[in-house]
Amino acid sequence: MARVTYYVAIPFFPGEDGDQVPGEAKEFQGSEPARRAAQRFGAEAGHGGVAFARTGDPATGDFDEAVVIARYGSVPDELPGG
Image 1 (cartoon, rainbow, N blue to C red):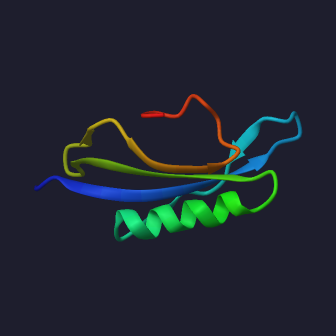
Image 2 (image 1 turned 60 degrees about the vertical axis):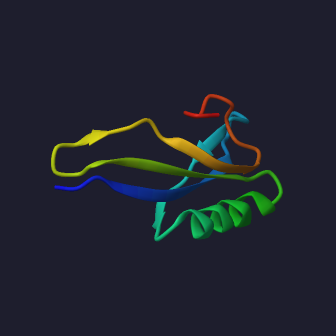
């Protein structure tokens, strides 16, 4: 099977201990829609959003490291590609 790129945005919310907790990841059809979604997530006070791309072969499960496209608001420092 051919390699494909997935574009994903993840919201982050303040957890009870003050750390940012990831919400449900959402897939998009391109980098720009994923970036805009991450920006919306990060627009809320105390929240954050990250958009990233990941390329690989779904048939074999072999994927490259995720590449962060955009970060908005309060997100953990230890994200891949960050």
